[in-house]
Image 1 (tube, helix red, strand yellow):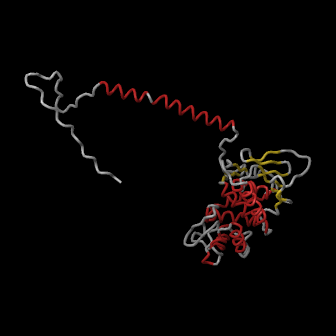
Image 2 (cartoon, rainbow, N blue to C red):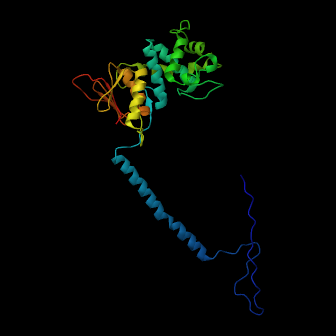
Image 3 (spheres, rainbow, N blue to C red):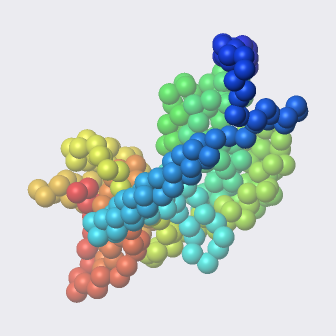
Length: 312
């Protein structure tokens, strides 16, 4: 909004000098403003010079804060996941949703091709985000429409459910395992842009094997733990519920560690992609350990260890 200009106010005119006593101050020339008194310029420079001590103090405070964070061992870590040896990078939110899609495919015994098609489809439809909005009544990872029989609003915004519904449709498409990705995906989705899925083929073909690999370190993830996370009890409940649906039967140990028996490396990768959501501080399995700041590192052990998730 543009405000109206403030009316200028003129100072009252000075009283006329007594006659016969000429002024000692020379008259200003017409069209040339009178010079400012030297005192004003000096005061201006004094105020400007006075800012330097404040700037120096601010810089010192920032430097001390940075050193303190490093000494405390809590430097900021960029959140995200990457596939080593490729240019594929995703946010932790995208990685978690992708891992859920891969977990649902594995639970159904579907080949890797199913995960590739599903990832490319979800990337096109929602950028692998569980959206609560979309075209008309489209919702969720796959932008499924309740009005078209995909399920209720709550169901299609449940990543496990929505991935399952996508795979229900996928396996009904003739030659889906060998057919053109964008053609197969559109046969399930019935999109207004049927060729758009093809652009994500390379991304999906790099991300899917990383999520399904039977070896550690195929997906590198990191994040900075929240300063005030939810309580351990709340996060434990979240982990155990998600694990039951996506990774295997969990057991909560006496020290609070969540153990998932008979879980393989795909389940370990699943845990790492969900680490920010669960507030995990450590994931260990078979002589390997993952932490938010470092990622995966080898910690040789004389015997195999089950998948364990630490929340504190």
